[in-house]
Structures are given as structure tokens and as C-alpha cells.
Image (tube, rainbow, N blue to C red):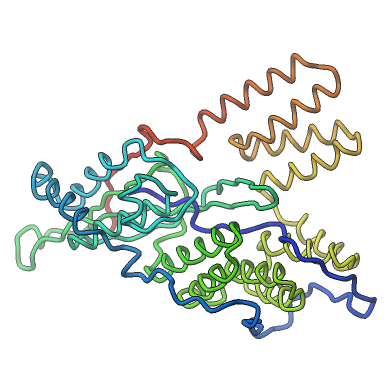
Length: 394
């Protein structure tokens, strides 16, 4: 299988659109202790889009792809249990698979040999559904992966698939002694000690897909399509704070600050510690020069442990501009500690050392950054990163 890292993409900074500064009567509080109903979306801002990928289209394979799969499934792999046949086929198919921040459908991922790990999970389900092998998805709670594209920060979680061995027929001798079900996990990240938050339903998986696509489309400026996909995500997972965050950002970009704020407040009611929403709400308040609200949101953000390296990088950049080199170096080092694959953390440290005239240390830091980049599990062509292992569950 292949597991998904872009299960959700959330944006930590508000995109474009100006807002006039409100007067003192508009200095609203971020208190979400009062129960709020979900705000009405300002649908007039967005053109309707009806050409969304359906679940059937998402997991479907072309006739040629099906035939290619069956040739091996019923041929050279026929001696294996059906779930292991799929994992073996995927191991060959995805050798050299090109990691790309794009959530493709099953047929697209198959044809292009590319996509993010969500796309690979979709491809796995497409194969499993075609031959009737049971598949479940497991969401992991290990530290997410972060990436930044201009003023957009992408937060990548992880989901992997379990392919289950078919159960013996009812009444068979082996059926009488089965107390556990065996499964195969297929994943890109060989870590069996990864913490997980349990299995997720197909509806939850679909919500994550539609949310992914909404964020990807927003990043390339397709606002109407992004709004349609975000609405679809809410059909499968209502009141999801990260989807509401995206819809809030879409309203903010379209110039409707009032609805954006209402959505941020409602999202925080669903998840009071969602840093993505808090950051976006804070950015909105800063643009509007609402200092009381900014301070309140800042306190809430600082009270939450933050593993997002770009929070520390942003602080480091501001400190460097002020000439506070010790603070800048500390912040860059903290970012590198939490996310060693983020090249900006090393570039920033090198810049501080260079500003101090210590070119030797600057070069050493850059060399370390290059080494970490080569070891990074993101944005690389996977040569042999695919792996699987077997397990059982009660």
C-alpha cells in the first residue's frame, strides 16, 4: 500500500484580499465557549461546480490497468494469499514511484507512477476493491510532515492501508480455530512503533480526499472548485475543523472577512486547539489591526505545543531582520530539531553564522542540511522505500 501523507493540507496564513481596520466596537473576542451554530456560507461568492470526482471514479481502474493487474494476480502471484498478491504487485508497480504533492485518482496514479501517499492509498483500494479483498485504513498520530510554498504551509498527516487475508469458508476446519484475522500493511515508512489513532471509515477517508483536493485547488487559485470540494468533504465528515478552516480561507480570499471569522470561531468550537485555525484567525485580526484579539489569540497559540517548524522559522526570520542573532539562531535550531528535513532551518542558521563572520560553521550547517535533505522522505523519487509487513488483530 502506500500511505498517505497529505491527508490534509491546511494553510496557516491567509491569502490576499484587503480589509479595512474596524472601529473599537468591532474588537470581538475569540471566546468560543458559547455554542454557535454553523455559519451560513456566502455561496454567492463562488460559481457552482458539478464536475467533482465521484467515489466510483476515484477508485476505478481502466480496462487495460485491470487486465495488467489480473495477469500477475492470477499468474505469477497466484500461489500467495490474495492480500499478499496485491502488496507484491504494488511493490513492483511502485518501484521508483515519483512522490508528487498531488492527490491523483487510482487510474491516474497507476498511469503516471506518481502522486502523494494519499494517491497511493487510493490506488491500493482500487486494486483491492477490484478483486474483492477487504481493505481498511489506519490513521497515524506520529509527527506530521510540513512544507511551505510561499505563504502557504502544508501539513501532512499519515494514513496507511491494511489488506486482509480472506477468511476460511464457514464450516471449514480452519475456520473453527480462527481467533485472529491476519493482514498485510503496505507503507512507505518502515516504522512499526508508529502511534495510531485507530481505523477510519470509508466516509472519513473520502472526507480526507475531498479536503485534500480543496486545499490543492485553492493553492493554484481555482477557488470555485476548491469550495465545491470542501463542501463535499463536509458531507462525509460534518463539522471538521480543518475543512471549515479551508472554507474560511476561501471566504477570506474572496473578501468576506465576516463569514471567514464566523467560520474560524465555529471551527475552534469543534477543535479549540487547532493551530491552523488559530493562526489564520490571528492573521485576519492582524490585518484588521484588532490588537486585543491578536493578543488573545497569541496567548492561545503559545499555550499549545507547536511541532510546526515554520512557526519557529517565521519567528527566526523576524528576529534576524531586527538584528537579534542569538534569538534567530535559537529559533532556526528549534525548527531543525522538530523537522530535520526542512532546508530553510539550515539555511537560516548558516545565514546567522555568516552574519557573524563564521563562514566555517555556516558551511558545516549547510552540509548537514544537504545530508538531511537526501535522507528526507518527502519530495523524492522512492527507489526502495516501499515496504510491507504482516500482522494479526483479534
